[in-house]
Length: 526
Picture 1 (spheres, rainbow, N blue to C red):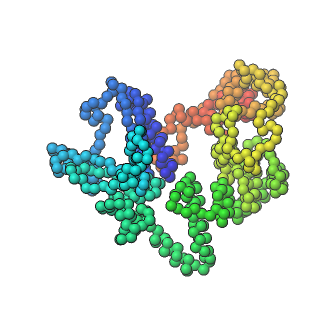
Picture 2 (cartoon, rainbow, N blue to C red):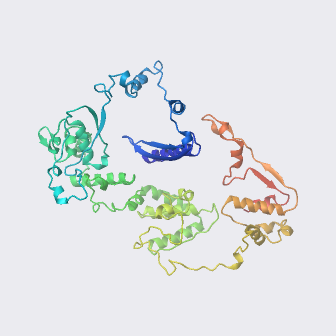
Picture 3 (cartoon, helix red, strand yellow):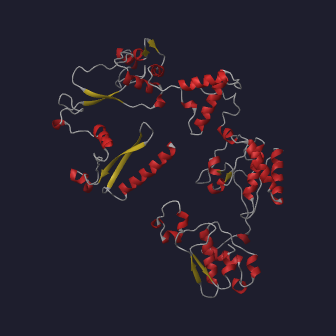
């Protein structure tokens, strides 16, 4: 969830920056700089500084008010919220208008002082570039740490800078500095009820400043005494618990190794626990997969079963091999892959289902794209390579792993750079005007193209060659409201231009053009 929130925030931030720069909602922006901060609950916000053109400076209140405004809730309609906003979210007036404002001390604005702090023996030392390092280290203040004392002159608002919980002891020290009154040393601030604790974290626990797991610990202890099937030692329970925690963390990218105060599970006692890929690929229900395999195997055709037997024999003999299955769409290639995958996984083995596109990968069980699985680069060059360990079992072999030359027959090459589609049509459909009325002529040839746009261009070029007048048919440019039965239908969201421009796989385009004798023969074959 945090990752999704951050991505949505970045999308909105980019859109806002675009409005500032390109749409010029405040005027011409010459430069900008921003920083992103995360609040205590992890929600991001941004501070943006704009450097405006001299013609679009905002020097007066009259210029700023139309751009930045805020409204206070109605006191009558929302009395509780109004009271909270008025008490905690509104500052002022202060100064001469209100000397009793919290920001006023002795009828003056108090200064705000940032209070730095450090862990024991980690204080900053200031010295000149020409000072001798031994003389600097011998000075008395180097080994001493000063704790803050009450100001003797004047008053100020003191603030301790924030510290991330990932910094460990520094984070717990900051908590103690905000809670413990009048400490004079690090030992003093770690002392609770006359007991000096070894770490600031332990002192925080002793003071009750951190949430503990006492209730969960008591429940686990109670279950260990009452449960009849629990026969693990304390060390085994601890190791398995840490292992499960590690798996949860790994699914969200971090690991227990990042937490210096947390123990790490013994990877040797848990099979393959140090390999995230193996853990993920073995995380399936074998009985369910066996049932799926039995059901799919019975549904295989004779041709699919021959493919299954050939591939599985190589797998069981651990020989390895490369297989290419050719077939038109809808002939059951994906079903064959699913059956083979279920057969291997039902034996407790690992299958990596990959595809070249994200849509194709969704059709495979736990499928992923090859770029995602093998970390393939998206922009390929002569020096591109994937991050597969060359010393592993997947190492490619053979004399042509680097570079090789492939001879392509001249009769299948398109040698016309100016009109390649015209040359392709002439090659596949020779003498088409004399033979287009012969049915077998189109049954023996076809042109395959990777994109619908290319198919449309080929169809248009062929259609213009045939004699006769064109007849066009348009699709319906409205949506059936019955599909919106469960929620309100807004026709304004779906204009005619949008509907007419849709090009959906498996459906014809908005406009179809036909001619006599060629309407069915040409368009159905592409």
